[in-house]
Amino acid sequence: MGVRVTSGRSLLAAMMGVGMALGAQAANVPDLGPLPPIKVNKAKAELGKRLFFDKRLSGDAAIACATCHDPKQGWTQNKPLSDGYPGNGHFRNSPTMVNVAHKKVWNHDGRIGTGLNDMTREMITEDYIMNMDMRIMQERVKQDPVYLKMFKDAGYGEPSNGKVRKAIPEYLKSLTSQNAPFDTGKMSKSAKRGLTLFKGKGGCIQCHNGPLATDEKAHNTGVPENFDVFLDPNNHQAFIAFAMFQGIENFMNIKRDPGYYNVTMDSADVGKFITPSLRELKYTAPYMHNGMLKTLNDVVAFYNMGGGMDSKKSSLLKPLGLSKAEQKDLVAFLLSLSGDQLTSAKYVWQGAYPAEYPVIENWKNVRN
Ligand code: HEC
Ligand code: HEC
Image (cartoon, rainbow, N blue to C red):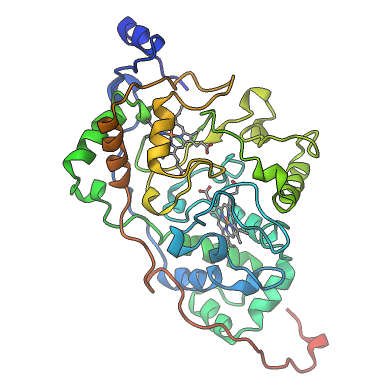
């Protein structure tokens, strides 16, 4: 990824495992910074908000987007592996929705890079996620007079599956970090020391850079496998469905998340995952693609050891030799990237959904 240790002294230090004095300058990467503003269409976003919390968008009307991306749990689920469609589990940790509209690649393996419209389609139709047929979804939405009005008011005309896939991404644009101390400048002394370590001795900025603190590239950090994926039949069945559909060979027998290999089919990429954003971590524990690290202290201790154990681990990771106090400062800095919890009515749909619908007369002759 183009990053080289330039001075012989730092190279020696890295080899000796005492950490390298690598500044942001040496790494030559975009600096951290505020998120650029995003324009949001209010009426379209309001419609997307109602859809995001509506269980009728899933096949059996039991789960909504918000079931796995729960505002009260940092728009994730605070457990290692996400729930799945009823009858399934999942094989990865649910990512937050906050700042998701600022990203350019999505999913832990980066398999979607074409936009949140496609991401929304995948979530609705995938059988281990919402297991919904788009045509049925469209008809369900059309049965609800509140939606008829909201689609019209948003300038979309009649409800359609394509418009649902536009309204939800419009709503996701409204979920962005608010008042994070890093952005407001109200950082504690410890957090400021942590920022210096982040850019220097810790070497974090090599991969976690730019306004989201991610290069959005794939790296192998050696996070251990979460064997609940393979030992719990609910999770395993979702994994098999996924791996089979993606064309991963030997999908019945492998006991390893293929990660970025799924995108490139290059064996060098097994175990690589996309660098996640470091914003809003205060609310999104546990961490990593499979939730294997419980706390931010654990994550920093993990990097202090030079990451996990994997023969293909990134050469950018080396033991850091951070003292206990330095590790604490680094955690304080990470927490300064978290702002207000987005749980008010501004972000969360709090209205009701109808349980019953008026009968459609002569329904066989109704045209779409
Ligand atoms: C059953 C749980 C579940 C439901 C329901 C669900 N998701 Fe997800 N979502 C996940 C998991 C798990 C991932 C990560 C998948 C992966 O990396 O392979 C994910 C990934 C995403 C991402 C990519 C995030 C990122 O940072 O890369 C977006 C965006 C998203 N979901 C939006 C939605 C929307 C919109 C809905 C409703 C239409 C929805 N999700 C419903 C579990 C769920
Ligand atoms: C070689 C690139 C690289 C470097 C250097 C790096 N990271 Fe990461 N980081 C990643 C990747 C890739 C992941 C995701 C791994 C996974 O999901 O298995 C990650 C995950 C994380 C997470 C978990 C986020 C979440 O939402 O689950 C935190 C916190 C984190 N890194 C902090 C740091 C800190 C602090 C440093 C410096 C001490 C650092 N990283 C250095 C690439 C890097």
